[in-house]
Length: 112
Image 1 (cartoon, rainbow, N blue to C red):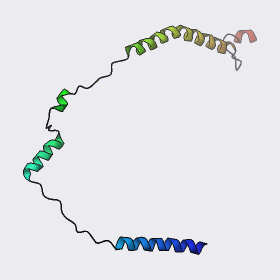
Image 2: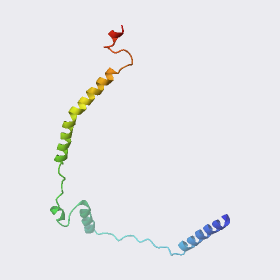
Image 3: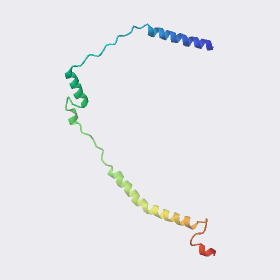
Image 4: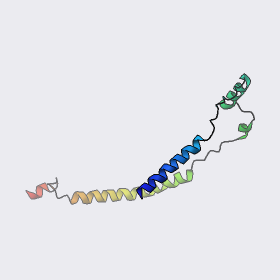
């Protein structure tokens, strides 16, 4: 089975090489030279020298600032801030009350 696959591969390579070698070699032809006027016109065109006034009629559309979304976000922050502060204070108070590692300042006198 291995010999057969090697034979098929070798024959495909040989047939491909024969097909490519059978084509005639193409001679290189240099592109025709441009005149000075053609070179200047091409340079102006590539640098942005417009042949027509198409760009003058185009107006760039600017997206407006989403003031409604910004205002809604600010309103949500204003409403949520008091609840967040209350939750933060309650949590820090609970953590301070349940501090069991070491001796805290308020409990030092009770233990003596």
